[in-house]
Image 1 (cartoon, rainbow, N blue to C red):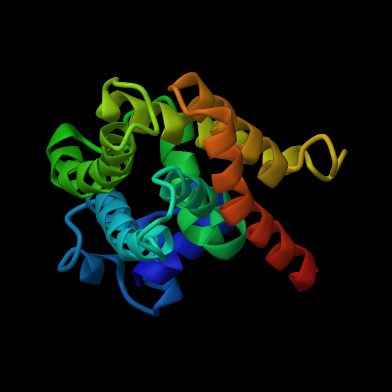
Image 2 (cartoon, rainbow, N blue to C red; image 1 turned 180 degrees about the vertical axis):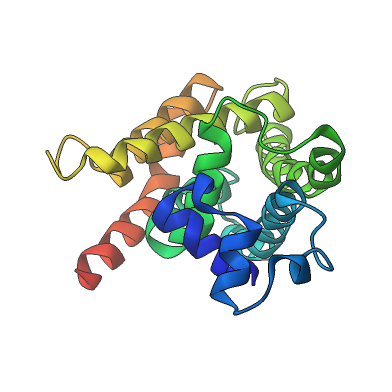
Length: 216
């Protein structure tokens, strides 16, 4: 049921998602869905939670270090690439995230939002932990790791939004290239040494690009 709800949001937008529409798709009367969700708000909140909880372990796997001597900047680059790949690899999850973030209206009431907050905060805490580790190991200058995690997420979300313009100019609106520039610019601004960052990029970004080219 949640999967169908994600499909509707991805294909038609969040306004298309109603309990009545979802009930018809499953040949149910709308009242039957109230056994599971008290309202559309509750359904959207559950979609938020389930999406975040599904992506979180995949994120942890993606950023896991592969060698003891690996640069502490490398997991941050992989974290960025994980998010940049969502539009292609997890289009329904990404569509949900984008519409919830892009709409200035609060789409769920505060009580439902507060139930979702722990899952989101845990996800962001993992990003902050990567930043904090890089700072502790001297790869980044001191600063608020939590604030930097939010900035990184917001910046990459903005880059991903440009992907819809790639049909007009694939080179100018290349999300991966723009994302790499965003990542490296932020890390340099937070004190990464250029040579150390270049080594991390050679280890992380180049293999990702090579794998992308092979898949085309």
